[in-house]
Image (tube, rainbow, N blue to C red; front, side, top):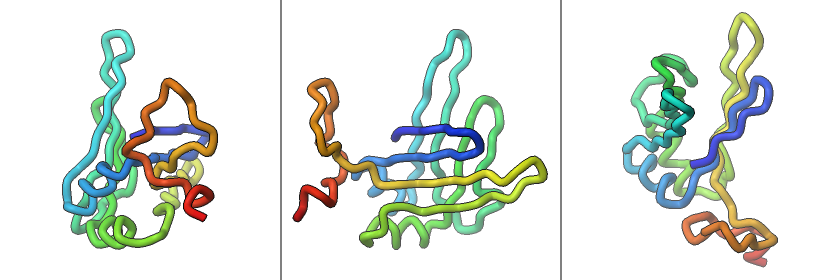
Length: 121
């Protein structure tokens, strides 16, 4: 799972196996160790969302309804897009299927990424 942060926008990009785990009701998570701090981030399938994005104890996580994740995983839809309204400016959230690059990079393993739509034509 990749996390991209740009201003007040968070974009999560997931591999095929991660999308499958979410569709089966299991959480996905990653961590980054920065000095003495471990920053974790992930997505949790839930029955009812309390707040789409939450941050507690150096952990950023998204809550997404199980049915939404299942439909997304089984369909052609690229992503799930959510706007979380906040007093200090809305937070834009994107959870997307991670596609293989059109131009291969030698050092990157893309075997678990989704086939790029331009390559399937």
